Length: 84
Image (tube, rainbow, N blue to C red; front, side):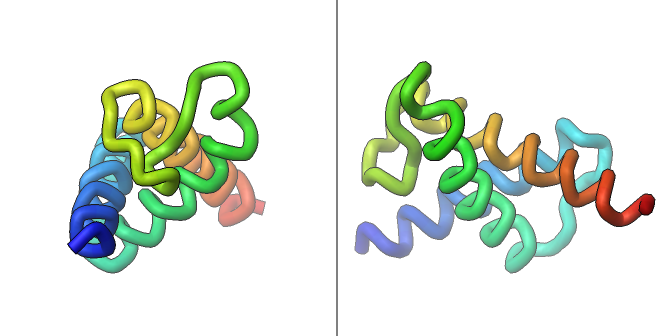
């Protein structure tokens, strides 16, 4: 059951990041991948300063914000790479 919640929350984080970056939704699979990968990135770079991520099984507001920040950074870097 925890895996399903993790994937749903990852999808919502990915969708929110894509909306914040001005791209709109990119499909459920891409949103989940962006959300989960963003949570890993957020956990690696921002977790020491701000707390845990959704990948730690902690679904609190700070963990969602760290995951969202990581997903936004991921989308920003992907857009920079695509333009080159």
